[in-house]
Image 1 (cartoon, rainbow, N blue to C red):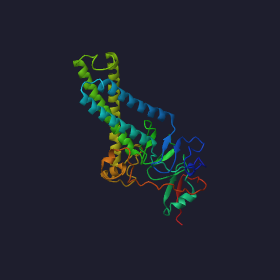
Image 2: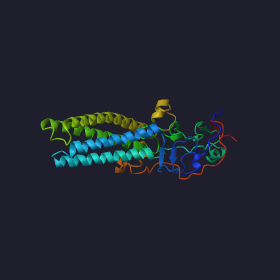
Image 3: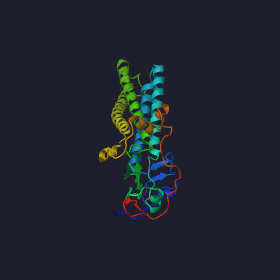
Image 4: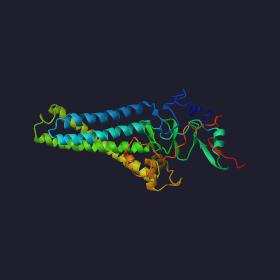
Length: 315
């Protein structure tokens, strides 16, 4: 089967470059999964900025409308500290999910020399992605936004402006979990603040005027409820995908049963970087047990092959 694309430039050979001048919309500084990675997609960037602005709006309302005007100092300190810690972890998780290579396959490695370097068995079949001219590993799928094949790609999320894949799924799970927690925390504080204001004078329960206070609290309540539902569902689906060792795109395409699945607990440990510890909840720790390719792998030079399905000769 011939591919409509006969030649693709291998951008992986130029480390630290922003694309190849042919419309590539990503920036990568190294082949390491921990290297800086950023997708230059307008929709994704806008969604990521909106995410940060919504968290900052919640921070503003919680601090300046509910906690600072409160007469109970202990209540303000405890809730303010808890909310700020969760918000910080949510934004840090978002940043790690957005700026971590999700597991991109080297672009343009579909050459005869590279296939020979894999030392495959006679009769074995490998597949070339006709869009990015790369040899697709098992369970890799092409992302039209990242313009790359991604290992264990679950989906492309515009809210983190990145694919959710093998190397950054942990950070996406943490992001959804912490957003759900701060949303729930904000809703609880809004309920208590309304009850407090109904019992006391509205002019004394906030430094803003009563109409402004009501509008700010209603908007925060709507935001918190919306994101609590959305991120809770996303968190549940991600945990389910990890436990069943089946990504969202694999389930959508009906590709189940084509690989040897690992047990649930082992899959969770692989996704979160090792045996259970507090580091599972930290967006600042790496994925230690990930079987990532070694850094600075040299892709053999050569012409891009035309066939999309390559079978290793028996001789």
